[in-house]
Amino acid sequence: MTGIRGGTGYSYPDGGAALPEEIEHIYPDYSIYFERIPEVRNTAYGFLTRGCPRGCEFCIVGKKEGRCAKKVADLSEFWDGQKNIVLLDANMFACKEWRELSVQLEESGAWVDFSQGCDIRIMTEEKAEYIKRMKIKQVHFAWDRYEDKEKIVPKFKEFKEITQWDYRKLGVYVLCNFNTTFEQDLERVYTLRELGYNPYVMLYEKDKIPAGHRLKLLQRWVNNRIIFRSCKRFEDYDGRK
Image: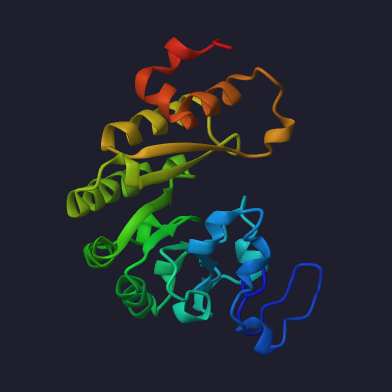
C-alpha cells in the first residue's frame, strides 16, 4: 500500500535504496482496496515509528529497520478522519516522541489498534495512562521470552489495574517453538488468562512442525476464543479433532 512507509533513510535487506522523500510521506491510496476489502474505507493503516532496540534473535525488525525506535511520520500522513487506525509499529513506546504521538492518537477520536505489539517491559504508569485516554479497540503485548517472567508479570498486573480493561482489549502474543519447553508455553498461556489477558500463540517456523503435533493443538485451542473460554484446560482439549 502506498504510504505504508519506512521513513527517511529506510533501506531494505536486499540492498534496495530508500524511497524518495515525497514518496515516503505521500498519503496512502486506499481506494485501490475498496472493492475487495470494503472495511478499508473506514480504516487507516500505517507506521508512526520504525525500528526497535531489542534485537531479538527471532525477529527481523532490528536488522531491517534499526535498533532504535524513531518517529517517521505524523498521524495525519496516513489518517484523514477514518473511524479506525491500525498501527504497524514494532515498538512505538520505545520512541522518544511517544508522548507527542500518543496525543495525536488520542485527539483523533478514532479507534486505535496497536496491532504489532507494545513492549510491556518498558511500560510505565504514565504510558499506561496515555493509552487509557485513547479509544482502544485492542492493544497487543508479547511474552516471547519465558525468562522475563519475574519482570513482566508485575507489569501486566499494573497495566490491568490502571486501565481496568477486560481481556477483549488485551492481547498477548506468545512465541512458542523457539527456545521454550512445552510446559513453559502452557504456563505462559495459563498465567496470562489468570491475569485477565487474551494469549495468542505464535509458532516459530510453523511449517517445520508436523501435523497433529501438540504445539499445533495448543495453537488451535488458544487462538479459537470460543473453545479457549469454554475449555479451561489444555489437557481436556488435547487430542480433539
